[in-house]
Image 1 (tube, chains in turn red, cyan):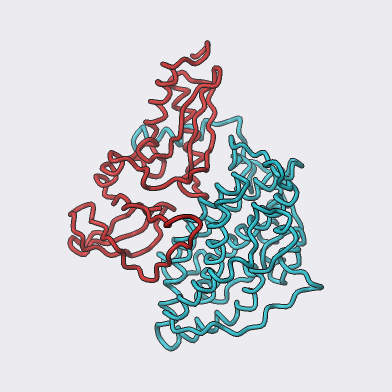
Image 2 (cartoon, rainbow over the protein chains, first blue to last red; image 1 turned 180 degrees about the horizontal axis):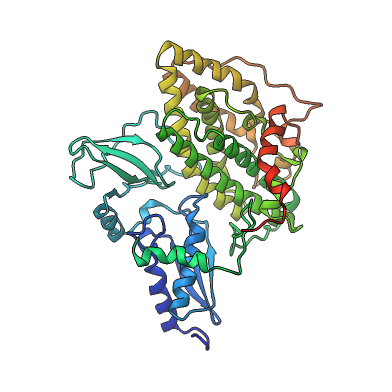
Length: 176
Length: 294
């Protein structure tokens, strides 16, 4: 139990717990791997965890907040609040190298670099064909000979692909 | 499921002090922990109305897209439209929450979504009708997302940091929505004779509602540096639509704008007949059981 004000060591311990929380929809990666953990800080005796949604309607945010409170509670941090931060908007570029490697091992292709507008405000370029500039390599056999079968998948953050070499379907985390 | 994965769900089951309202959100404020003060010099009442406008567009359109579930031609399109509807619902939640906070009268997103009357909604009329077919769905989604993307791209620099953050996040989502719609419009327009004719007919059906998207109003005028004059968007959106229609071998319809009622339309709370039906479906359950929790 934390009875005195939360000291730096305690914040560090809380951070380690928060970083290791798995994402409910992609449980092979942690909040730290995904880059959605924005901060862990102490306010008096309270631990304040700041997270950011991947997509505006992300239904996992509530589960993530509950899981954070639950796991931090198990680790002795009983006074925890979870805050949301919107700016800057999450980008798939924030997924760590380790996160990408874990996704690939689980058969999910990690995202390529997010397309960026030249200098805001400027129009977002229109894409009229489903053909991608850079191929998405198959996470199973590594072949670049893959085809997108659907631009949206079972969760907001994924698209569906098929490998034309090994013939396996796979999911791809969209670059955003 | 490993023990680690299970913990997220276990913690939900153990949650006892946080009863959720059965029909709305009622459990998380989407802007929790965000500094929601209105910047100096910004008209708070006008900001609240402006956020309602943009939130209502997304809320009503999301519901119309949800009505397509189990009716789409393929499972892949079902997941696509469901994801688009979910993104828009997320935008609506944040915008309605922002509207309630700027208004300062204690109205939260659920109250704004489920307990306002028809004439208190500020959405454009484009989002009200049930699409007649898949061509109409893709045509309407193309127009809506091209317009909203152009608008949110500019709003990302708005002087209200909360609205700017919501818009910046929406830009990424709307880019996907627009590309999805544009690719279908091209595929149908440049497809068979039948698909071409259906796509062209769909554009004719929705085009009378397009002009309203670019009409200025008093609320925008009261928010310099925050709101975007919709007239500014006309060229950018027009260029996008022309590019798509050219690739799709479709003609831009020459249609007179739908008439207003005594100079009023969607942004003033004057809606089409279809709106009453979609709103009734959206609200009736919540109104029948206003105190239900689960």
